[in-house]
Amino acid sequence: MIRYLTEKEVILINALVIRRYSPKEQIGVKLPELLNSAVYRPQQSLFENEAYPTIWLKAAALFESLAKKHSFHNANKRTAFASMKQFLWLNGYTLTASETEAEDFTVHIVVTKPSIPLQQIADWIEGNSIGRKKES
Image (cartoon, rainbow, N blue to C red; front, side, top):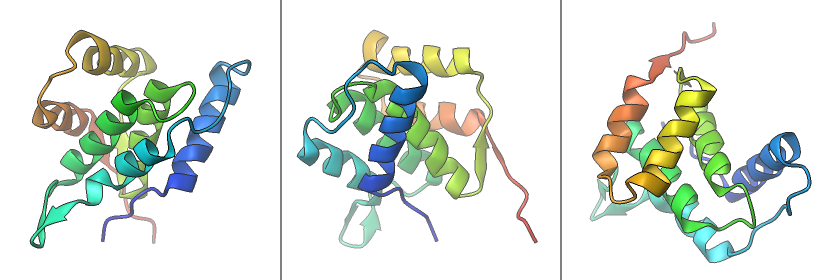
């Protein structure tokens, strides 16, 4: 069963990211309806068919929505990446990309090539993730 992030968890991630990297920036949700849409996007289905059937597409949908919708006052891209990383971790995967690779990827998706297909985002995530061993 997939463990999805809640709105409260993503709001906490945003606050933690800002406190760590840019403590003078305003913390908080700017557009709650966009946050709701972004958080629930990976769970969407139509006639019982999942819109995003793989963990990679779900992670990509969450990342893309949070990064591009700007639901927070600040740190939307950083929050998007950290949320995607946490979503993967909760579901048994570790993202292996370095901080520089993560930054480059995020800027590429949001600024350089904002119309990149979701499948390409999912492929990058899958190629930069490994499964974690289950704890006994």
